[in-house]
Length: 308
Image 1 (cartoon, helix red, strand yellow):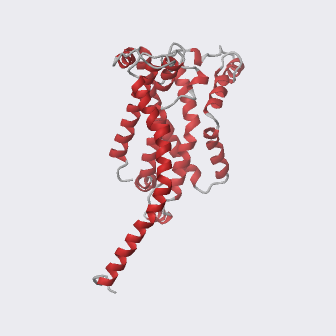
Image 2: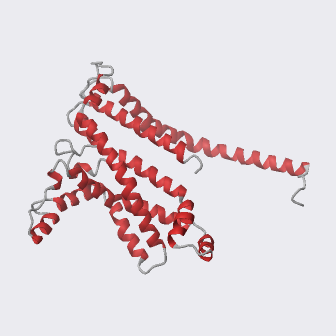
């Protein structure tokens, strides 16, 4: 049959029957697997979210049933709290460090390791190892490293003959010390994403660029980076959403201190809501965090990832 030939009536009938049979074959799978998934999602996600939104309008300590209705007062207290303002600033710093340091570092290392160099698998393992480590364990390790009395930083300071610093106890430096740990901890995840994207690029495209006389930087800027576009957008998405939810790393390092200088939105929720038995206020913080995360996630996906 030529390219311009019109399909016969029998061919169209067979195609429609095949399409109908495929659609009918999906119904048993949907009936079998969709109800349990919907039930779990409703019980574990939808209902707790609805309860948190309802409790946010009460002054409640978590015991008994909430009775003291306060309306929007909890939300007003959130935005009047200077610690929450500092938490928003710190989350912005984490997002900025992730986008300007963590993701570019991961992309650079991925381009270095993805080539067939000696020991590439070893370097992949070493760079990915921090991500495998539990966040709490990583925080405890780095708290010892930063310790100005007995830690690694103190040992180096004594070796070179200077006064050891106490970075985690310094209100102006503690957040920057945490940013260094965050970059160290998570860049390996983004690096593996970029390595997977680089391996999916057709080698003939890069060979054609070599034949045309393109330099290494020109190949990266004009060929590799555009072909990695979807992977870069996905990596940025994970970096932003993960930065807004950071908790496990902060608590063993500083617990949000000193003087609330390293609070994030999640540690603020824990320190000012859960530990102080102000469940209504903490629920309001959770609702605000949920709205921020959902708004950013859906806006980003709609604007930058609509074709991915």
